[in-house]
Image (cartoon, rainbow, N blue to C red; front, side, top):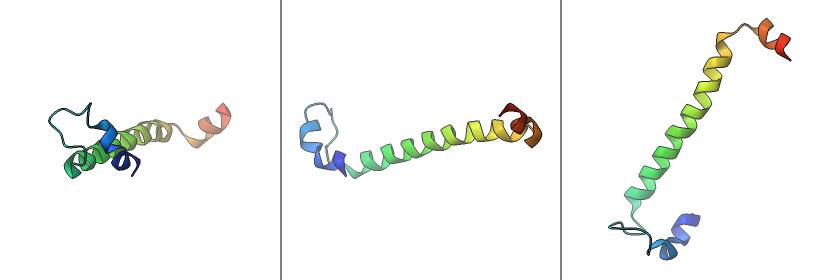
Amino acid sequence: MGAWALSGALNSVLFEVQPDDPATYGGMALVLAVVAGVAAYLPANRATRGGPVRALRGE
């Protein structure tokens, strides 16, 4: 919502893209969701490889 409100100010730095283009907002939301998913998945996957006893001993 903040980006939508500030789209007029961003008009000078966007090249060949309208500041209120819904495809751009949707694409960026998708990219951010994928990056957040990978950032959550990688540590969770590594944590499940070790046993619970090993994890508790590390604490």
